[in-house]
View 1: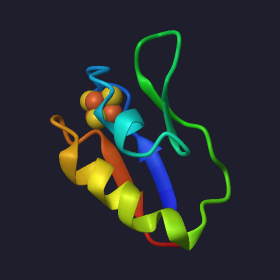
View 2: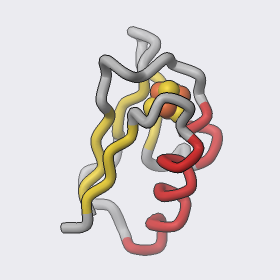
View 3: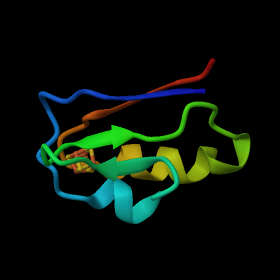
Length: 64
Ligand code: SF4
């Protein structure tokens, strides 16, 4: 699966990092970044939960 942050939409609330800190991290600019390249299937549910919980719909998830 492919995960990306739409940086213009991110308000840096930290919800995604709190939900799945293996994949999401707030960087020095105060926006979320994806810190994992090859995302395992086991993390899929957490990633979807993070994306659904993002208040600005800034997380884009595509199934590769
Ligand atoms: S939950 Fe959404 S708005 Fe909040 S830090 Fe993550 S990507 Fe940004």
